[in-house]
Image (cartoon, rainbow, N blue to C red):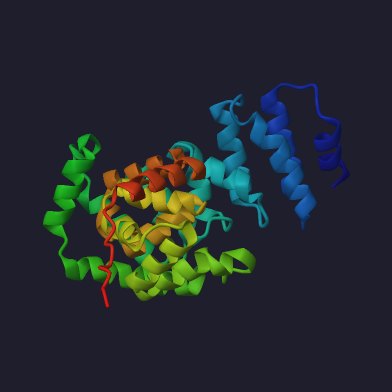
Length: 297
């Protein structure tokens, strides 16, 4: 334990690769790392991430995949690397929950899905998703545009299948999503509850109240295009995994297929809350208001 702390606090004059490997190796030797030690490793390793070699990333990913209490931010960063680096974590790491796995499949597609499919005890919904991606793969899959992917998905999947997918995701998240506390209980938690119940009216009212937008625009966020959806969720400052889950439950037709899912995740990660609120404000001002008629006595 003392060796790991010395590496983090005092630094090292060795190259980034050696420091990266040494810090992770020392961390993995800890039987029960504390939160402080986890934070120390992430503070050291994450800034080095852009400078270390692919070989060092592979080494660290393999080491952390066997670690009982790995640093979650570092694991997630490695899991978002190419599959030749991420595979050990995708297959074995307990730091990746079901929301992480769904997001990783949506972001990276078939290669990550195949690795995730090898996880022992994988949830059936995620396993089916991985199998569906494998079955749908073809020599032209990588060259599909989002529009082509959406058309293919619309041709292959009817409303009943969309609803079955949504219902299975609801059941999955009921058992895996931790109950929100504090401010989340009045924001993400309430929105998640409405989405899990398929209560679009409740979701619309929540968006209208929280974002101070009209009911008409709140409905457009749910029933409109991806730009409306991304802006509404980004303005709420939801985490990427949270926003993706809400989108999947409320608007499955917008995130159906690899290309559409990737487009949503890319747009969401580029959207800041302030820009999203400004966009919504301008959008709201363009929507005609229904003014009640005055009656004379």
